[in-house]
Amino acid sequence: MSEQDAGPGDPVVVRVPVEPVDAVMEADARDAVDRYSGLAVRGPLFGVAAQDPQDGRRWRVVVEVTHGCPQYARDALNSLLWFRAKDEAPSRQERRALLAAVARLETEPVDELTVLGTRYRVVRAEEYAAVDERGGIETPRPTDPEPLTPHWGPGLRSVRVDDGLVLDPDAPLSPLQAAERVALRPLAYSGIRFPDTVLADSARAVQSHPDVLLMPAAFLITERSGDGEWSAGSSLHATAHDARRTLDFALTWMEPRTRGLIPYDADRTADARNPPTGTTDETAAKLKEYARAADTLRAGRCDQVEAAGTVYRITRSRRLLRWGPDGPESPRPSDISPHTPAALHPCLDDDGTVHADGLAGEEPVR
Image (cartoon, rainbow, N blue to C red; front, side, top):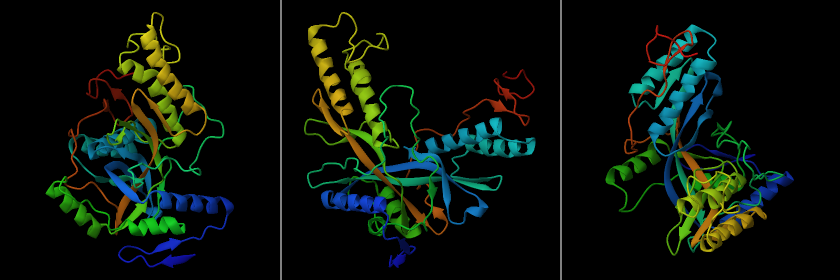
């Protein structure tokens, strides 16, 4: 291993790939760099990371960094701690500590708190994608994880984004990962479409959190109609196949209902492949177009299809966390939320009893 001169921020430990799998992934990444020369920044995402005293500089993601505003992440932490108090706390003392944190999250837009020795922090990541010279967005790479046997039916529990992810700024990186990390350190917003407060916060973050940490790739559906720009058509998924499964459902079930081709009150088994009785020939032809696109998606590792004038693409999303002396960046003053903190769950007393009316001492929920 060797250290690359990183300038401002921490040194980056570079691990030269020698194992065959690592070497193929590095070659795959090099091909992507040659093909996609630009970046399209979508905006911030938020989640929650936790740090125990023995973790050193490492943090663990406990709420996936996929939420569109800080308060959504705070609400998710609220629920995480409430259910931990309800289902896992071994004593009244620990339950009381967890519920005290929940009470704060119900009334304050708090971005960091310590509970039972563990630090919890709402963290902010920047989502971006690689683009080519014509504005095409990067699709999944051949070495991105895929299931050995693709499953398309309902009932499969997908892997959660960031499940078990440890944020370690000292972890060794491949040469291309290290180069990308160093190159993105100065990344900041620019241009007239951003308010002055957003630009100022972005410039300040480069100084206060001079390093960056690259998160694992995630995947989503993007859509483009006519000559318009690409827009997000789904949330993030842990694998490209999970995004394809979502697109398959959208093409065959959701889009036909949204466009009035199948009534919303039709049998839930009716879809583009199985139109309801009484479907007209004209509507059947439109449904067949959606079914063909979905069948194409199932034929292999297909990442782009078109139906009814809309192009659907499985896109490779990338995220970076800014990192400072005390760890990952929290929300910025200019990051806004559409709602304020509120109580999300019924009252839970120190004994673990849930009170539906919110008053301890009344009839509990059984």
